[in-house]
Image (cartoon, rainbow, N blue to C red; front, side):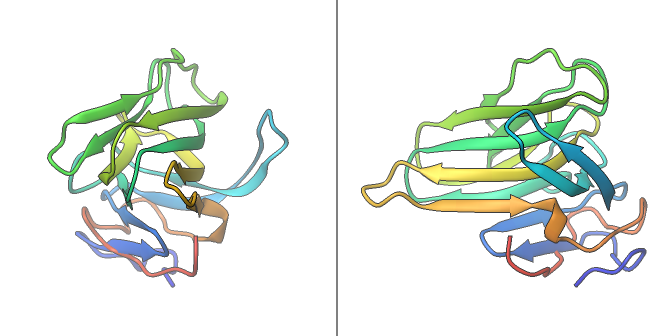
Length: 168
């Protein structure tokens, strides 16, 4: 578990099929939001910065092409959700022209298997839930839910820090 103010610089948070790569400004906090499809979350993950291969990212691996659904709130006008591969090459990005504090449910497509990192196109957005559905012969679904995470205050997480926390 990751208690508030207990996360160190460079720490990674491993949880089920996902790994949070913390930024020094990463925060996990209470925030209730209901999305257009009826999903309600009581916690959010503020990534704390723009997506990089070593911080401010949620990492996951697929064994086939996949559809990724992201429940998120814009941290500022014009910010998007982006997915890159382990080398930093952009693989998908939303194009919603986001408005600060607006909730979105976005679908992104990954054309091949691999290890990917999901995060904010610039500065921070708030992540509530990620659903990854592989297009394998036997479909696989992975779910990240910020509601399953313990709180973490700003500046309490290190860049690249891993945190074990339940099963999301």
